Amino acid sequence: MKIAIAKENLEAENRVAASPETVKKLIGLGAEVVVASGAGAAAAMTDAAYGAAGAKIVAQGEVYNDADVIFRVRHPAAEEVSKMKKGALLIGILSPYQEKDLLKAYAAQGVTAMAMEFVPRITRAQSMDVLSSQANLAGYRAVLEAANAFGHALPLMMTAAGTVPAAKVFIMGVGVAGLQAIATARRLGAQVSATDVRPAAKEQVQSLGASFVMVETEETKAAETSGGYAKEMSDEYKQKQAALIADTIRKQDIVITTALIPGKKAPVLVTDEMVKSMKAGSVILDMAVEQGGNCTLSKSGEVVDVNGIKIIGYTNLPGRIAADASALYARNLLNFLTPLVDKDSKSLKIDWEDEIVKATTLTRGGAVVHPNFV
Image 1 (tube, rainbow, N blue to C red):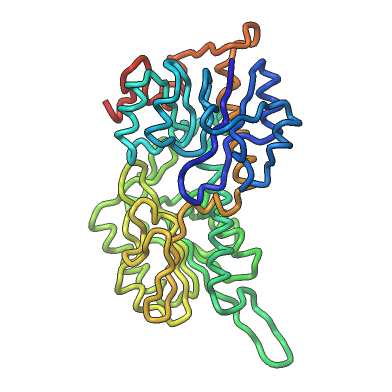
Image 2: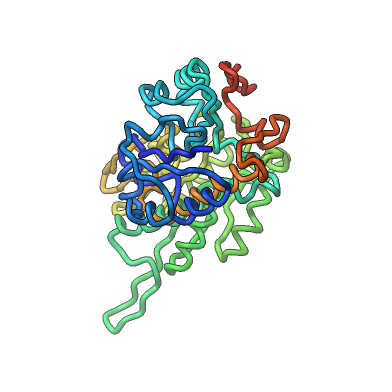
C-alpha cells in the first residue's frame, strides 16, 4: 500500500496532510509513504524530518504515481485528478458542495473520494473529526487577529495614569470555534458575551465565564440536528433575534461571527445597519466569509473599513496556525485510515456499510454515490 502526501495547491494553504509523527505510524501500518518535496515547509515540517521518519521525498509531479491512498488538506486541482490511478483512495476536506465539477472528475477517473468534513459526529469518530480539530484552532486564531486589529487593550488595566476598561467581545455562534473564541477572549481579560440558536449552548457559554444572549422560544428547543449542527431558523425568529442582537452589538468592541450551515450559504447575522451602529475603532471578524459571510459588509480575504470599523474577512484561519493545525489534521487522517487497513495483509480492506465510510464516500466505482449529490 502506497500513501501519497501531496503539496497543497490552493493559495495561502499552509497546512499539510501528514506530519513526521503520523508518517512513522503510517509506515507502522505497513505502508510506503511518499511526500511531495516542500509539502510541509509552510507548517515547519521539513523534507529532512519526513525523510528521517521513513518517507520518500519526491517531486510534486510524481507524488501520485501508483499511489493507493492520497492524503490532502483541501481538494486537488482538476489536472491533478488525471494523474491519480484508477481505484485510488483520495481523502481530504474536499468541499463537494462548492466543487461539484470535481466530483464528476473523481468519478470519471475511477477515484474513490472521501470527504473528511462529512465524518459523522458519533463517539467512535471523535478522533477523526477534522471540523472540530480545525475549528478549535480557528476560534483561537480569530480572537488573536481581532485583538491585533483592535486599537486598545483587552483586559481591565488599572494604572497610576488611569484605568483602561476591559474590551467587550461578542461571539456569535457557539460551536467548537465559538467556544474556543470565548475561552481565548476570557484568557486575554475581555468582557465576553455570546449568542447561539441552540439553548444547550447557554450552559456551555456560562461555564466559560461569559454571558448568554438569546431569544428563547419553543422553536429554539428543536434548533439542533441529531448530528450536533444548528438548524436554520424561521423568519419570525430571525427578526426577534436580530432586534436583540442589534441592541447588543452596538455596545461591543469586538464581534466574532462563526455561524455556518452545512451545504448552504452562511446566515446573515450582522447587517449594514448593525455595523453602522458600532463605534469607531470596533472590529468585526467574520469566520464564515468563505461561505458568503455572516456580515453583509465582509469581503473574502480582505479587511474592510466602514466608518472606522474594521471588518476582517480572512479565509482559512487554521492555515494561519499551520504547524498545530497540520499536526491535528494529520492525526485525524491517521485515525480515519487505520480501521480501513487489514492488520494481516497490510492492505486496504474497507467495510462499505460502515457508518463512517458511508457518510464520507463521495465517489466509488466510477460513479458519484453520496446521496447528497446523486
